[in-house]
Amino acid sequence: MKKVSFFRSIHVKFVIIYVLLILVAMQIIGVYFVRQLEETLRTNFQTSIKERVNLLAYNVVEEMERKRTPEDPTLEEEIKKILRDFESADIFEVRVIEGKSRKILGTSDANQEIVGQRTTELRITQSINLGEDSSSIRIDKKGGHRIWVLSTPIKSGNNVIGAIYLEAKIENVFTQMKTINGIFATGTGIALAITAILGILLAQTITRPITDMKKQALAMAKGNFSRKVRVYGQDEIGTLALTFNNLTKKLQEAQAMTEGERRKLSSVLSYMTDGVIATDRKGRVILINEPAAEMLNVSRETVLSQPIISLLGLSDTNTFEDLLEEKDSLILDYSTKKEHYILRANFSVIQKETGFVNGLIAVLHDITDQEKIDAERREFVANVSHELRTPLTTMRSYLEALADGAWKDEEIAPNFLEVTRTETERMIRLVNDLLQLSKMDSTDYRLSKEWVNFVDFFDRIIDRFEMSKEQNVSFQRLLPTHAIFVEIDEDKMTQVLYNIISNALKYSPEGGQVTFSIKEEEEKIVVSISDEGMGIPKENISKIFDRFYRVDKARTRKLGGTGLGLAIAKEMVNVHGGMIWAVSEEGKGTEISFSLPYEQSEEDEWS
Image (cartoon, rainbow, N blue to C red; front, side):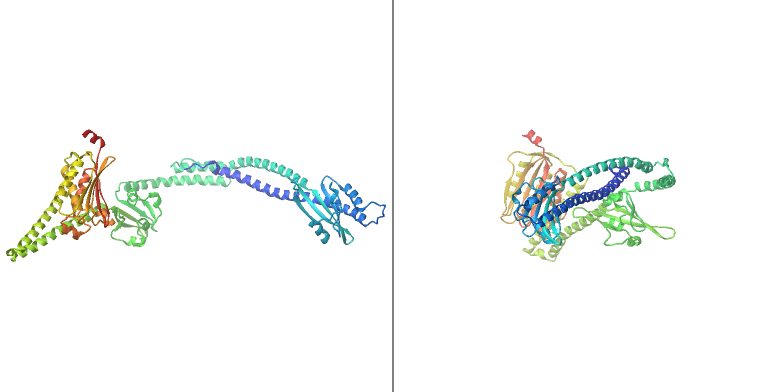
């Protein structure tokens, strides 16, 4: 069993839960406390300032309503004197504005030039018009500190006769809050550390018995049932430990009873060569042996609990109930375009004494080779019969005609005899080819190899065909100028080249060209013969080396072919340790190539 990582253990989870609970509680309390404290400090600050502003407003009203003589100081001078007494460390600036004209009567700022000017401050206008306070907090552009801006109306009775505009330093309130937040964060950190330590100690009291039970479970998984879990207390975990010990005892007894049966079944299945699959009453796989898994190319672990009809690929044609009633074998064809693969499945129902169906047993047999041999045998017999019947039928017809008196006709008789002779030669070629293939299929077939300069050897065979050809076909030779020595059976390789070149000439059109080439590659040479004939369809290229296979049967018989030439060439090339293949394009021609083992060092020795 994979070991649980430290950060995934229940011990750590307990500690994390405790710490998170304290953290959440502290955060909730902290947010509420800090928010309320901030609100209180800000309100107290603003209330204190407003009280002072109200006192200022009272003094300003008296000065604005007092009747003045020419000898008395002006209103602006009195306002300036009042504002001088109003100055404090918490206030940036205080302005007094007259109500009707919006003229600034006085300011605590050093810039006294604005006194007497008309203010355009929107906040002052609103407080005068509405008769209400207007305030907000903004950031000072010069120092970057927060400033509380207040505009309050100056009232005389119910009439608004002016306004007081004030800018106060509220940054001190937020500085105090920052200090308080730091103290609270430090307290939270200390509380979390203490909680983590207590959580570790508390978690150990819970995880220790659980860890003990985990060790016991691991021991049970390995087959050790003698170990007991220690009981730490009489709580729920202690009761669980007692139950776990009781379970261990029961499992030990059950294992002893089932082990013998399991060994018997395992012994039977392991020595069977056939595939065996067992299902439950719902058709789900509960057992599959190794041969069956290999036959179906599946993993034994992944197919358990999978429906058997899905595993066998019968979902579209059969149900599980159909398999229960199946008396005969089923043929399972898993063949592809590249490979034939056929299985035979026999089914047996598992029933209890009461007749209740408890499952199904399927036994699989691989019959691919048997089916392939039977198919090849049937095809071979049919092809040989057909190839022999055609010339024999022709000969019988002409011989009957000669027996009926055609032999007396000096013009017809020679033609009939020539046809009879041609068909006889065709049968002789067929029989010889069959004998050649039979020899190659035998286990004692041997080659008489010798080292041959393949370039000269190939050139001589091409000369032979070029001298005896009857068609108007040109030859092109793309052969190396240096010697290439390979170890071959010269007679057998002559037959290979004869069969391939004969086919190229048969299917070459008048005026066409046959090209011969040899290429040197790593550890082999590749010999190619290409024509400009009709070509071969893509779906037929892989079949042209099969026995009796013809792409155009009518034309092949007309040209005298047996359908065995390329099959013989393939067998001979294979026994030489090479490979043969074809490349073709319909309407443009076909190229037959084969390879032969070739070692450069051997050539160097000969040269």
